[in-house]
Amino acid sequence: MYKIVKKQELTTNIYLMEVEAKRVAKSCEPGQFVIVRVDSEGERIPLTICDYNREAGTVTIVFQTVGAGTKLMAVLEEGDALHDFVGPLGCPSEFVKEDIEELKNKKILFVAGGVGAAPVYPQVKWLHERGVAADVIVGSKTKDLLILEKEMEAVAGNLYVTTDDGSYGRSGMVTQTIKDLIAEGNQYDVCVAIGPMIMMKFVCLLTKELNLPTIVSLNPIMVDGTGMCGACRVTVGGKVKFACVDGPEFDGHAVNFDEAMRRQAMYKTEEGRAILEVEEGDTHHGGCGVCH
Ligand code: NAD
Ligand code: FES
Image (cartoon, rainbow, N blue to C red; front, side, top):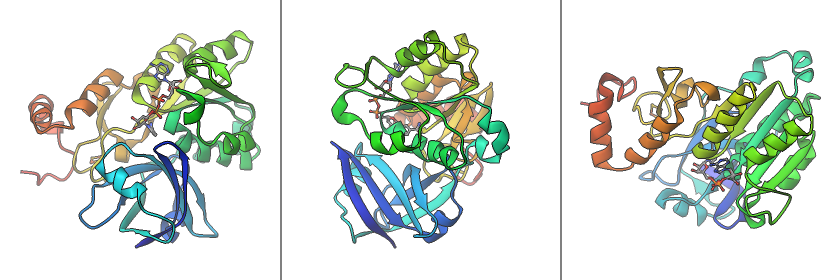
């Protein structure tokens, strides 16, 4: 069991939990995720790691109550425990392996949309701790839905907050702020965009025009998180990939977002899964080979 040592409602329906998970805390890196279960019968919930403390042996996760599993999770309080906390899963962000001195010469722009601020935070923090100052755009629908602003401010080179309705910070979607920053004379070597699929699609359409290489972190439906079930199948550069083991980060300009979004919607129903199985043939399932 994995004890919840801190719980905080960041805003309506978005919660932060710090969980005692020594082994995950010891080895996780920015960009990776965990799969959580509230009880032994519970739904498997994939969540990106928002922060970790190796000394304390804790991992911080942020989640939005979108379905039954996350609603059950939201009623847990400090002192309660999660049944499963599996991870770290997926590949760490590419820059973790890069030379720090080279990274210091790179201008990196992070774009976080809504709850996507949670996975962006550990990446910016990791860079900040090594003397790399990255610019960050955080977008939310409205001021009340903005999360992790103070935390991000403490680690970002420059932080640009934008709200769709103009209730706080700049006005408009994150893509508008990207255009504004470029028009103001800023130049970037790489962009990292994490948020809803539709946001990542439009950020990538824009950065392709701007000739700005862009990394995205995909969060399709996941079940096992180990490349077996095929739920998280995406097409990148015309090739089938499984986000849980090949990602979750990919070259955004090579991702087929329209297919990923259609698949995400279809995978939710039995009928949709049956259609996908016919359409996708041998690549519908991942690597277990025993589904049938
Ligand atoms: P949201 O719908 O409030 O959008 C956040 C921001 O994204 C907006 O403020 C806007 O600036 C930008 N955006 C949205 N649509 C856009 C468009 N068409 N063009 C340009 N910019 C656009 O975000 P939310 O409600 O927090 O999103 C929840 C979704 O994010 C869920 O589906 C969740 O699964 C996903 N999510 C993804 C990740 C990930 O790792 N990729 C992590 C956490 C959550
Ligand atoms: Fe990736 Fe099952 S979640 S293959």
